[in-house]
Image (cartoon, rainbow, N blue to C red; front, top):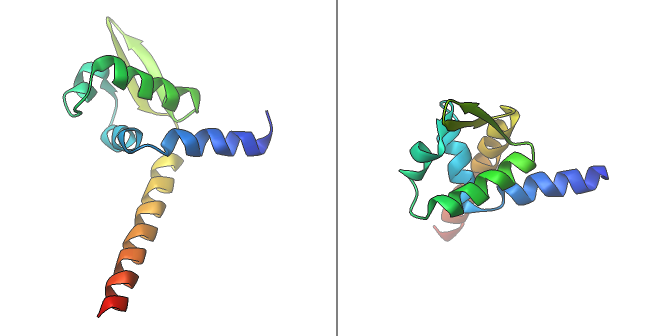
Length: 101
């Protein structure tokens, strides 16, 4: 796999509002599907598909604990990446609001 393909895989995995929400929910610590599913408005199978995409991109870990699979952030740098994008968005919003005034 080319390095460019690896970039694309990570960015594609993060390029969905539900997956951004999942990563944000996991910032404090690991959660199981049942805990994640309580905070989203779609089926468990849909949630599982999103988790698989994030896991396959190397963003999440999945560890079995008894009957549950616990999901956690594999590399904390992904949180920094999302925070950086959030700062960029805030700056853009600030710039647009100043431009209107």
